[in-house]
Amino acid sequence: MFWRVILVLVLSGLATGCHRAVPVQPFAESRTPPDLAARFFQPEGWAWGFVQVGSNPPQRYGVASTWRVPRATVIILPDTQDCAEAWFETATELTHRRYTVWILDRASECGSGRASAPVDRVDVTSFAPDIAAVKALLRVVIRPGGDKPVILIGQGQGAILALSAAEQGLRIDGLVLSSPSMQSPTEWRPWSRTTPDAFQSGKTHDPWRGHVTQSWMTANPDLRGAGPSSRWIRHATQFDQNTRTSAKGLGLATLILAPGPAGMKDLDLCGAIGTCSLVPLPGARSALSLEDDVWRGPWLDAIVRFIAVKADAARRVGPDRDAPATPSVPSPLSDDQRSKDTTSGSERNSDL
View (cartoon, rainbow, N blue to C red):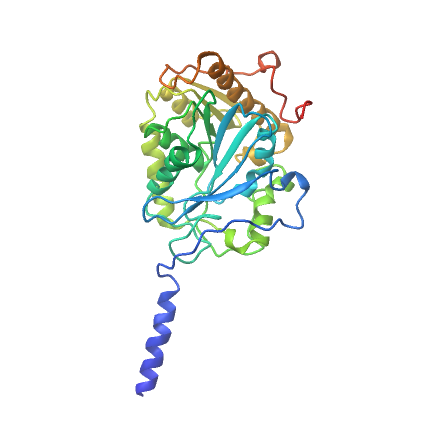
């Protein structure tokens, strides 16, 4: 009887321990999936690193630059469940246009450290660590200076994070919000090879780009994520509301890219910011970075033009980050407004 009690206690301890705080170390150097096309491979010269603030788990970042003198620094904050690897194609295209590209994984996701199990569930008590990591990446790791503007790009939930960081004093020269009004993801279920990818979930028309994240997670178990906890969803909803309320009078040059016709949330947000341009992409779905070329091309064109305008202005007037911001991208866009040093989203620079 005594040993039976001991055995029950041990088994109970193991069962409850499955969901205790079990720190998981950050992960880098992911293995390239065998089913990916070369355009989705790691950019040339890509390097991984980690940034940690206080006792928060480390967050993974990656960086690639151009072999020529870079014209701007671009920081990308992906959507939740969207690892840095899913942005390799975009990072390569931006480095070809002479921009240094940094991508920061979200807290407790992808290659970042996890605070608790199960490791494929996104569960944070607040988004403060995400904001702190963005600030530390810019201030401690990137340390911008000279005449190169810093552009912050956020996709989906990452767009709201980018907006909040700007509201909290992150010193950047331009803000790009891609699909900032995406719906919250569905609640966590254990990851499996049959977990719907972005294409199957209706986030993109492109089956190849839509499967990229699932491919990386299949080949690299440490990257896997299958959705957020109910607590995360509650925090995300309140975080979104608070961030939009605080955007009034931000006065930072901002570009909003909206799938389909612009909705009231995007129009209201752009109006609140003031120095903002909104570019709708009719027919597109929410994962714009993974969309078919019909929509991804104009999406990338608009971003490249926005960055080019800021880079040109910085070369003319110097790094005066306190100068009043003005809208940098007219809407709607047309070919005759394209900067001379950029190409369309479906082309590469001819002088590479």
